[in-house]
Image 1 (cartoon, rainbow over the protein chains, first blue to last red):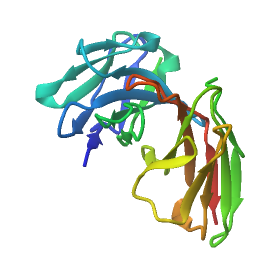
Image 2: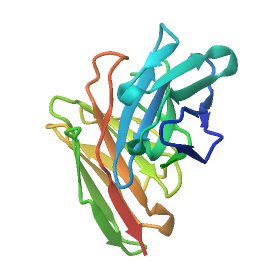
Image 3: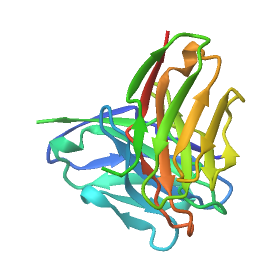
Length: 116
Length: 114
């Protein structure tokens, strides 16, 4: 069965600093990979996704992620965070062979706090 | 705004009762998935409906059931509520045309079972 691990439960960074959120997955082949963001009391918003091709993926709000097959990782990065980036971030995998964004398996999330 | 709306926003039920949650999918979308997000956890896939048929189910008991209507809106029904059913329930809609499609999530229904 597929699984997703987000090893950092909570990360605190200063506004303007760089950010990297870690995600490792377990899957028999190359999965579809996603990062979602959830603000308090809100649903999930898709930041970016990897289906195939270029392993460095650009998303919304200045985020990017890099798929590394050898490390089974899909880490999320941002060069300079803004106070509005404070939220919960979820990494997810979708099954190959399905319609990729369906039946997602999510990690437990990383809560991002921004300090002035 | 994703165009996916869920109702109600919040509700409180008593253990043993039954509950129905509703999801109106984004216009033109034919697939709806439901997820349960317990406090401090990531969402867990409950089941999915495509053209009114259940099309995949996660590790949830049969007391979790659903429907999808001809207009592609959907309901999630939970019978014999248990305290552990307290969670945020999210629905996501998508248009099944290719692998590279995006699912859009609603804001969720917060269910509290007391």
